[in-house]
Amino acid sequence: MAIYVKDKDRINELLIINNFTQVDLANEVGVGQSYLSSILNQHKPVGTKTANKISSLLSSNFEDIFTFKPSTKVLQN
Image (cartoon, rainbow, N blue to C red; front, side):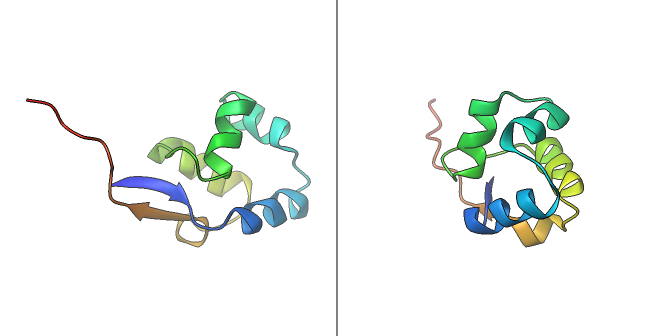
């Protein structure tokens, strides 16, 4: 299972409410802005630690902004 942002519009609302830009949030979380943008736009999954940091910084519950989706990664033998 992979963790993805549930609703990118809600994330943008939370950024505004908490007075963050994507650059500010990326710096606080400790990731690059382009990587954070990919996460917030639902293009890449996010790790548990990073998702928890984002939830905390945006004063939101993990379950309110993230969802679990089946991984599309193909395992090779």
